[in-house]
Image (cartoon, rainbow, N blue to C red; front, side):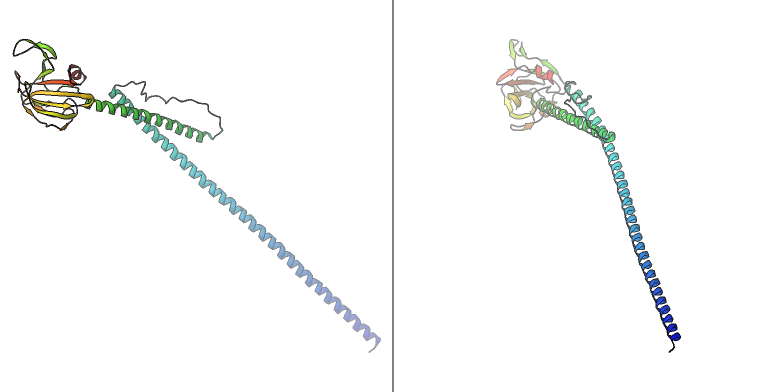
Length: 299
């Protein structure tokens, strides 16, 4: 092979190698660029995902805050409604208390249902939302008012119950619905002898056969005949009181019977030492006869 051919072959090989290297470099550059682009795309996708996740979290927080706000508004509305209901109930309690005081003829200043309950003490300043503070203050005021009214009503209930029981068991009132006093208590002229004698009770004249009534609740301790009294009923009451109803046409109760105030115990008559239909009414305490007049007036 000539020297010229060798040179030509060498040149061809050189350019072939050079072109191969250039092509390889271009391929490598392309691959690197693709890798870089892929990395950038991955980073961008990751950033986009992070941003979307953050936006989703913010949206979730907004929804939760909106739900909390709605719940709070609903609770405040319910609280305001409850306060309105408590106010209405308090007005009814006040009206009831005032009626009980009036009916019981009690001291209006002692049982005052028109003013706030007395209170005192040192309050510490606090910073609270106005709406919440106002509602809590109103609830606290109503709570104090209810406690005060409850205490007064319990006292009223106890006082009136005691009075009712006392009115039931302590002799008071008249033994007849219709009739008049025909003879009083104390010294009088005996209708049979004309002499001055001591009358131990009060006589109530009325219509024959009308009902004789118990003037207090108690237990019948006697129902039968007594010399001078004719048919008689005796009832034992609280505090050692005994009431006696004499000259009855007929007794309606028996020994051991429990009778209530105002219950019929006999029929009006004129048995025993009597000049006409009437009931001889006596009040006895500690085996001593007392004037029934004050019990009659008390009734």
